[in-house]
Image (cartoon, rainbow, N blue to C red; front, side, top):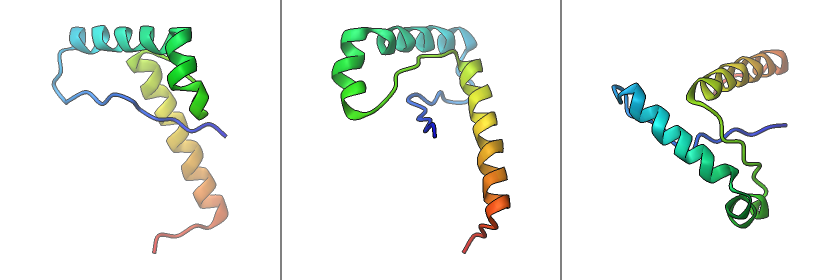
Length: 78
């Protein structure tokens, strides 16, 4: 099972150039082996560092998969 944590949430209306720059900088940090080992891997996280579009696609896939699981398991909100 994969658990996705969105580390950054951009405010609506943030200019695309700003989103791309911040996302790239964040991905660079996450991909740094020393940083990843000391701050992510040791606590059980798997660093990925992807683009905003890849994150949107991943979230869409995960929402679909979880919704199907909930339906098939007959889970109902209380």
